[in-house]
Amino acid sequence: MASARLLSKNIILSRKLNCVSEGAENLYYRLLVMSDDFGCYHADPGIIKGKAYTLRKISLSVIEKRLQELKEIHLIKMYEVNGEFYIQIKKFEEHQRFRSDIKRKSVYPQYEQRSRNESERIQTDSNVDSCSVSKNNNRNKNENENKIEEILSNWNSFASEIGLSPVLKLNDFRKTKILSRIKEKEFMFDAILKAIRLSPHLLGESDGGWKCSLDWIIKNDTNYVKILEGQYYARKKQTTKEKINAWAKK
Image 1: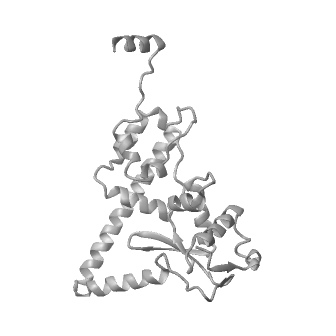
Image 2: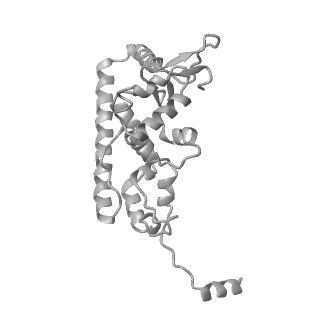
Image 3: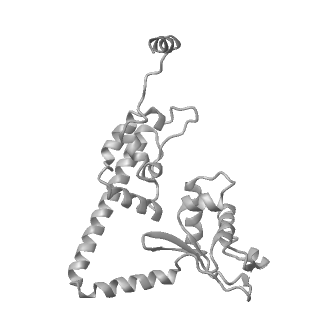
């Protein structure tokens, strides 16, 4: 996407960029390359991992942490358009030159488009009783926040007891994922925790020592379903003699 623009070497003198960690700076340069001609790109760590870090092993949590670091120092801004999260690099044109013979191309929704979409939604709903809508929205928001707090509290208590990693910070990505999961009727969190207790593989009793985390559980609608289906339950290992007898019976 960067074929129509040239990056200025003066970017290495940016005070903000030199204040972040080397990892966050590395991500910033990769976002510069992957973004469209208006500095916009996906904010989903999974997409960034697959596209911007194709040949490098890196965890989603590391990418997430680097994004938060860039956001907190105001090098990028995050926003939502039609249920999808995006980033836009601030002062994108400051350290770049664009080719005059090639028209700049917008591939992803821009931050300003988020504002337009919101205005259009408000205008469309103008005939609805605004007080009623506001009350319903606030009530739903409070209910969701209470559910999120309950899930985090239950997970941290469970994780501390069983030797898993607690959640120290509720960021935008975790909040979005939890909101998506609690809308699914199959997402029964108490049952999930009970099933994890019966699943040694999820508790680090495997060759690699991997342990499940809340981020892994809420990542999609597949992981927690596998837990509830008992796909990680403890199973008795057959001895060599038992395997031979089983083979003979067949």
